[in-house]
Length: 436
Ligand code: SF4
Image 1 (cartoon, rainbow, N blue to C red):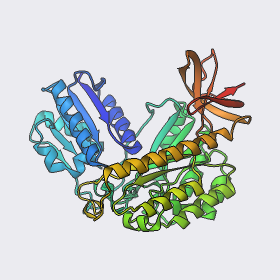
Image 2 (image 1 turned 120 degrees about the horizontal axis):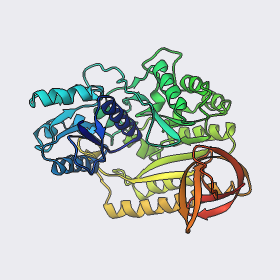
Image 3 (image 1 turned 180 degrees about the horizontal axis):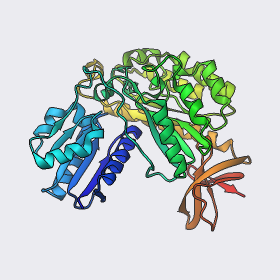
Image 4 (image 1 turned 90 degrees about the vertical axis):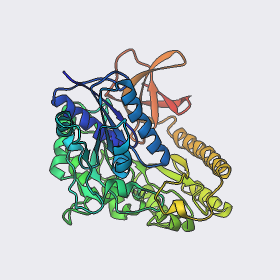
């Protein structure tokens, strides 16, 4: 039996695809072994979101070849797609499989075993029309929460981002295939699913007029065994009154919304080629707060974008305080080769980026703490996931609907169970203690 090892880099969509490839290899009769062990075939699902991600992708591919020089090393994903020529010249890489070609993985490996010049499967994803690439999962590595890919590609072309070139234009997955996968996962015990995509808010733009993200969520909501639905990152402008109101009527939808912001300053947003203003963003958050009680709103922010002055940064900082987030992921801008932002004047000094990042991390920590504190002395329902040791004692941890991490003492295995209890206060860092 041939052995295969896989390694994933990057986002949740890549993670989904890596698990799907693993399941394809298992069905084809491969034994899956850890990436650190000797294997006949190594697959690295690469990432290209930053120059650093490119570098890490190359490192993992080289590590694989080093582990077993006789193995077949397959580079797939976004680095393989955007740096096809470089990958083909790399002696550590045997086969290059671009995005939208991963479903052919097993056939492509077989072909290479027969003829080692048969090693390149990369579509011109930006010029040739593409269909959504169907991959299938029946389980995932996570125990209670399954991420499901429903969409691929992006039409937004933010000035700092290479992803539209790596993934191509928006392609939505067919409803019947999504529902079949959710049902399969539900039958295998998953109670919570996360709908995810490269640009989730664009779900349906290439389908019929009635199909969009809201209609998809309503269909998934009908699946009995699924008890919680979370949403991946959303575009702020999708949050219309109708969207927020309709979602609030769906009891399984978690009031946990990640609205990607990047900057709270309109001038910076313009240079980023983001398609909303700070005011429109704030209006989306206000609508969520109108229809949901204390929703968890989380976001991403880039500091030190080219041309970001002290004034622009302060506008963003004030905006973040005004909106008030549960969690913020702060990124220091790092130029991505081949993007418009890389060629912009007034690149910001690394020390300034670090100082701005530190300020926002501090602000984020304060707001997170405030958000969690709100739940002290309230009764919450938690979906427990795993046993952990905190301060030398055994607990089970899980999450509330709003994604607040909670621990409870228990001698029994609580994994994948919903338990109600009272939140009595902070246990450690971001973990709150529940008593039953
Ligand atoms: S929305 Fe912008 S940042 Fe997100 S994938 Fe598309 S181009 Fe990149």
